[in-house]
Image (cartoon, rainbow, N blue to C red; front, top):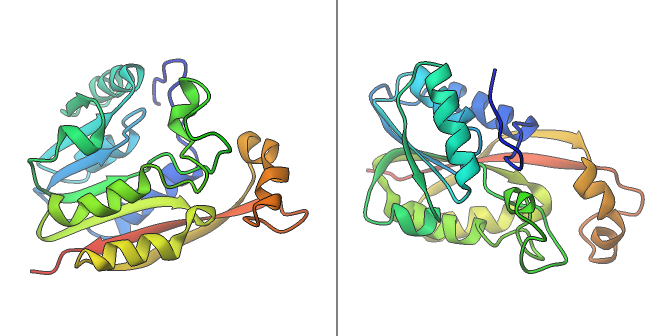
Amino acid sequence: MLVRAPGVYRPQPDTWLLARAMTEAALPAGARVLDACTGTGALAIHAARTGAAAVTAVDLSRAAVTSAWLNSRLHGVRLELLCGDVTEVVTDRTFDVIVANPPYVPSEESRPAGRSARAWDAGRHGRSLLDPLCAMMPRLLTPGGTALMVHSALSGTATSLRQLRSGGLKATVVARTVIPFGPVLARRSGWLRDCGLIRPGQQHEELVVIRADRTR
């Protein structure tokens, strides 16, 4: 059970795909974990319940941080909760594990159309936060650390892999699933087709989880 304030991203297949990838990765007990773009705190709580020593959860939305706090109390776990831009509030720290489910939906608008849309809209290429996160991860990870990030293949799987590898990380896709378009992508299917991001008549997307490791 998860409490969700109005406008906070509801845990969906991308959340659970990333949670399964976290479990399968057998992340080290006692790890210091960063959950970027925490939303309801679902992934932060999962990390805390599977052996993390300390979990820092960050979100730009005050409603999301409040929801994550309530959910941490309901599930009996302790989280450090920070409200702000993840590219700014943790730049001077390092973590053993990073998990991220950032906004990644391509949008005609350069900025989200509303407060709720901040949870998914990510610019014309879907990379307004993916690019900064890929650039930050080599600095945020401790030696031997691991990052797991989920996003749509529409946002450029190869681009994420290339950016992470150029930062010195070992990066690969460790999980995939195909799901039907949700309401947002369904409404944008014509624009996505015109941009060449989907085929005519396509009504599904592939989600990927990318694992990036900083070797010792």
